[in-house]
Length: 357
Image (cartoon, rainbow, N blue to C red; front, top):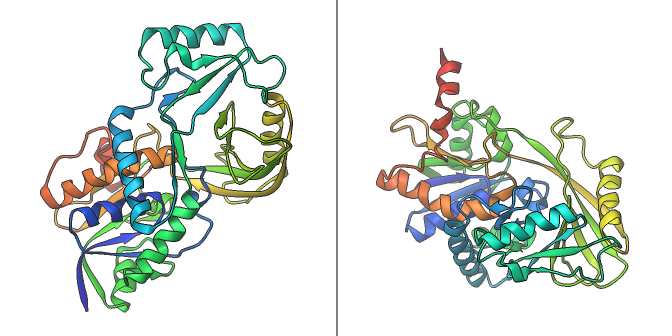
């Protein structure tokens, strides 16, 4: 029997960053994951954007999150011998109205968006945008993580080091520990990184997840596009040659029905209204994101001495949030450091107590 300190359940973006934080802290761990290519992390675009485009403000805590983001994925890429981090890929936000152009110029002139947007980052539209585009905002220090490449390589890394058990498990604590024990592993702590499945967990089912279905497309463009991310009610990610990824829809009902033609048509229509040349869909995939009502992660421990911990609710900003807060949870568990109140799952504690009354 191998005795370890931490059992990580789930190997999406939350689980990978938890593994990285545990390694850096010198904490022995093991992972259980079904290794299916259908989870929300595997399908997600992996974009990190320092600006909340609708509100024209910096993303929450971006100045703290970004240094850890770049450091973490750079280190993982070097460790695995891959490239998953595509940093300094600008996000192009097309502008089609005078009012919107005025709002962006006012925000840029105020200096509150620096260093991600300055007045010089509002430029004439590029030739790929449709007629009627007045300008574009070029968001700097943004990019994306190729999550398919990252997850695939991390699985192989853990298999090679004997730290991954491939298998599906239910939400029950005893079942997770039994699966681990069947493979000769006994842990002191279990950290749940299972996305929307946590809704069925006996200790964490009360947390206010708002699962949302997202559809992503693989598309082919008619012309060569720049190495940039276009964003206007969609995001168009650069790919290989003229093959790109296009996303994503948000659906709160009928979560598990798979891709639909209506969602495909919706995404293609958004691109057609924005870009000079249309794109053609060649594949569609869906997954369910673990969003939270207040758009903040969910971290914490269930009771004292139970060894049950939650690292979840990364939602659509998981690439940004997970590196920073994985380390925070590790310090909380092993060094009793307090959690940031904005991410502590007990900000919703009344829901747990109400359920148990």
